Image (cartoon, rainbow, N blue to C red; front, side, top):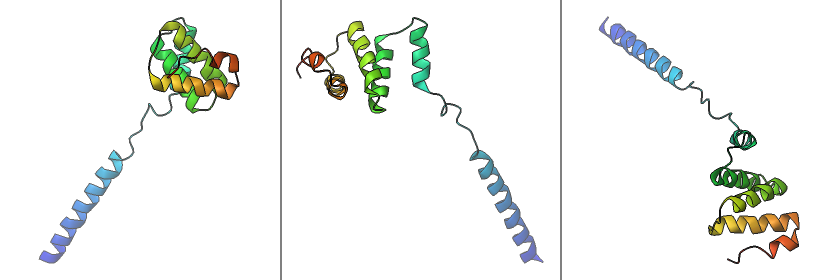
Length: 111
């Protein structure tokens, strides 16, 4: 009889813990479906563009291999502020090469 009650208590404990763990694993991340690029472009279209936003858009399009759009945002970034970040300058050079814009690549700041 004692064995049955211990087994029943164990099964009850195991059932409760498995249900509580399974409920906590089904949380939904609401931020995973937000397209940040779209949000930033909306902000720029409303007239609130900043150098930070231009940098984020340029990097996003650069890493998506959409070099024409990346070039547009890199140029807006350089209009908004002068940057000496070697990563940004290297990405800009790579973007110019990808777009095959040789006359613009000569004007790039040397690393």
